[in-house]
Image 1: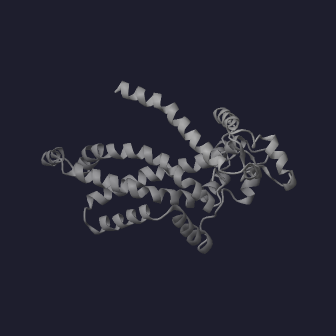
Image 2 (image 1 turned 30 degrees about the vertical axis):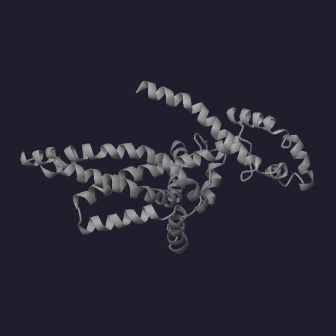
Length: 294
């Protein structure tokens, strides 16, 4: 086992180098002028684009460009963000807290609600509740992120006006960026608590409802199906029949004996699912105008 882990670790640098060569090759498919256009803004006229090419060495020999690109990547210099109009390193620390905040708030309902729905579905096997939740999970697993996000935005924001888009209301945003408000983490919910501003906390939570629900619904489907299958398998085990034969209360049988074993595969896939939330975060942030990495 240790030898296998060591071989995997030794292959990691080779894999990263191969990935780096692939990414660099894709960048080289663009001409120097096309790559220099990323640096254009209102302060740099388009007539000066050749100046940008010379300044950043975009027409240097490919080996020199690759060495420079590899050095910058290793040192954390990821270039210029056309969207944020600033270096990626600066934009990352500016927008990453919002993405982390959204991911953290989405993780809680994904694990808790998804697991609970799966157990309820298994305990009502082939009944109406089970059938409804199976359809619920299939729909959540089938629809793309932007479809669910667009429907939620259209219904609960545009039509009903229950929950707003964006990250904060205008008044709350002004208070957050005021000198009196200390941004400890740049996560508005946490900073609002630390600054004892419950009004900003409530406003931030209202803005989180739609994106969190969207991300959670997409992940509930998998957690629900895995929990349901694991619970059904555990219910048919001999130790469950023995526990019932001893006269234990059904609640004790379910929560002590069944769920303890059924949650093992859920725990395994839950960690991967939390990482997988990042796949939908970018699209969700764009749809809801949530100023994060998206």
